[in-house]
Length: 149
Image 1: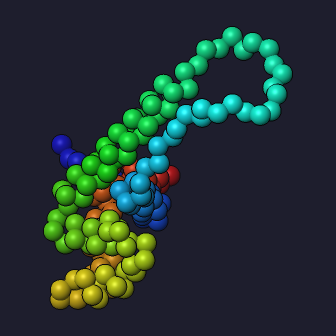
Image 2: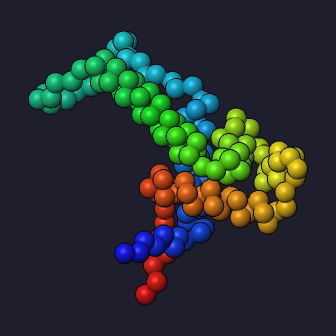
Image 3: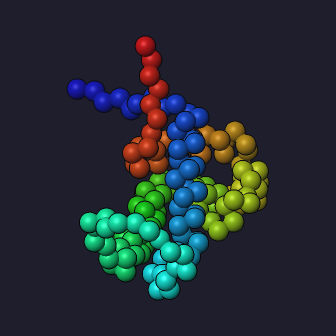
């Protein structure tokens, strides 16, 4: 009995992982703006017949606000759990480059020259990053496999 790890499409997988990490930063560091019910009547006259639908605007808004906050919290916790399972070097790279508040403004060069002590080479950085992306993609179930015909 043998088990083979899938061969992943590097570019597509990297794009998928970076998109998830960007979404993480947005959810983690931006304030969730709750929706509010409109309580003023519209000055426009609307001519329409009965729609035979009943709606609870306040209830729908309350459900959306609660669900969206829970979704964001659960998403962030899921990403943090996946990253915490990575080996030390990979975890450090992902946390410094992609999960910090300044992640949008950091470059790979900044990370491998200034964050790592001692600094590492660009090739070593690329290898560590790919291993981290590979593990994260499989763990988060966002891996893009390469199909060979």
